[in-house]
Length: 284
Image 1 (cartoon, one colour):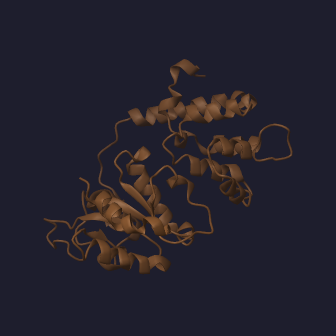
Image 2 (cartoon, helix red, strand yellow):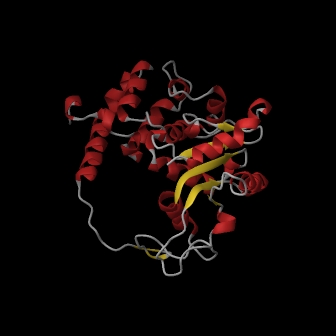
Image 3 (cartoon, rainbow, N blue to C red):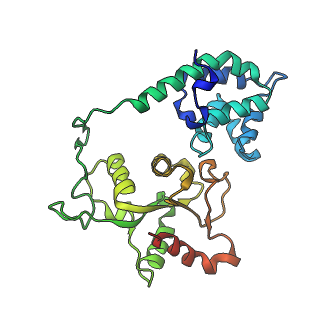
């Protein structure tokens, strides 16, 4: 078993920890009929709010969901997870699962060092190329000049009216920005997940996320948000901008709480809303 000094836990994300570890960790923390700190204590130390924790309680295996949400944050390293467990006085968990943790960390480091083979990849949507051609309305048919955008708009259908207002305020004014709105700009007949990934990563400088209660129930929005976050850990490139335009009954998504929000719900700041958002999208 690797010693603590041989593994830099701070450099290893929690996503390196595999299913067997997660299942066993849940067996320690999910039960609530114990005098030891349970998943709720750990969730609170991970900086989840009371409402978020109450929402997790509805699940059969709450800690698995807590860990899945927390691991999208920039501070979600193995070192910080071990620190939280130690502060929660669950050294028994660390001791019993140490061998699995070290084994998962070693495997992660080996995968990182392994040089990937450069081979063609074929998916269900056809051969994968460096950049797909003819996926948006104004793409060059010859693939010489793919259409690019200032921002990809992540939204659900119930929020489309606000997206129309966004188009009006950001495209049809002196702001002169170019937005990628999936229902308007993407050609039919394309593979949704693959094309969405390419647009976010290669064609759009930033992504605006329209947050609402319905957004929280959208699988497509969840995928787009997590994919964009994976491209900018810790939001160092300011790539993702959350926007709230109406009051919410559900808790604000925890994976976005570390980002500055553009809030349209406050009457006293609405006058600056579009100017701030346009400026953020205009940055290099």
